[in-house]
Image 1 (tube, helix red, strand yellow):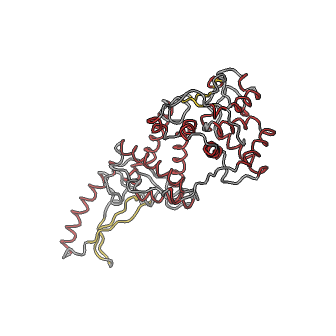
Image 2 (cartoon, helix red, strand yellow; image 1 turned 135 degrees about the horizontal axis):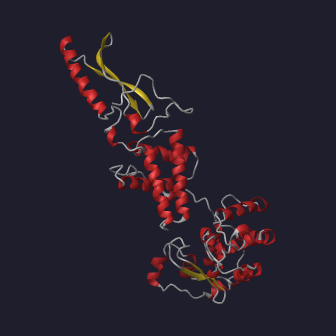
Image 3 (tube, one colour; image 1 turned 90 degrees about the vertical axis):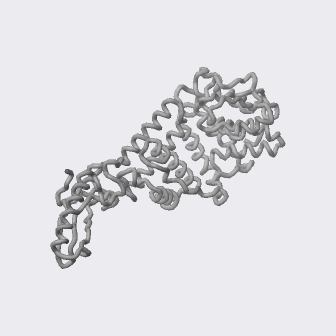
Length: 402
């Protein structure tokens, strides 16, 4: 029997709802039911552990409706016997299901983390996808610690999800897009819990994202005169970062893809660069045009003098054997903000948006720009056109503002 003594669980931290009692054992703690007959009436009283409040709570069952003291006491003995039997078997009056079926929430989260680590190790997840999920889990744990003690999987319900999204959006002051990203994570995590048999249905069902029409995109295109100033500043102060700017502006190669490109992926004779399947976002090998301007600049930097297996961006953004974190590009971009007076909405990734816009304004065929950008609509485009792997002369000779 998991009968508990009269003392309540020891509290931890500053939040009175938190307790160091955890697991199914805590939910099985109770005091034996007793019969009371006093000025408050006739009733059965006992205490049981409430996971929501993290403490023992008093439960009473009134018996005033039973007429006659003898009948009332006889009835009470039967109820006490049944309650004691239920409590011993794991029943908890504050939980909607038997304690024997409870799954500790932290155990489920730990198993989910093991799952995504396995997906990363076997190449099913990209590193940035894995890092994203780990970050979401970290903030979810922060929310549980600060706002909503959650000990068992059954407590991960619709209200939990809605309140957590409000915490992300309102209290952490994140954007609507970030709130939607967390909703996507909760949907994935809910599906995992259902697949493992921890939940019967997804608590995220029916929770809607904030419509993209209702929020403004934080990233903006950069005026071409500012693009020119960025190029001049980088050429004088951060020349290897300028190569990264070129690859984003002219070739639309994503930062994470840049960190995985090696010298061997560049074909100077044909004027192309190939993004291997294991490096690209859509897991497809794709070849795009490398403008002559970019080739000549990279040659001048000595990039192609490095061993062919070297990453083109390694330590200090120079060729080398160590793969770097793509966040390094944002760090370099941050260093440009103050000296150039860049707006907050002009982000490093804005170079891609600006480059695409510039190509379209230069009257390059939209289909060629889409091929160069490798947009998600590429498959639809290829229904009507053959995807080219040869160099596009218009892009090859392009000499823009950067």
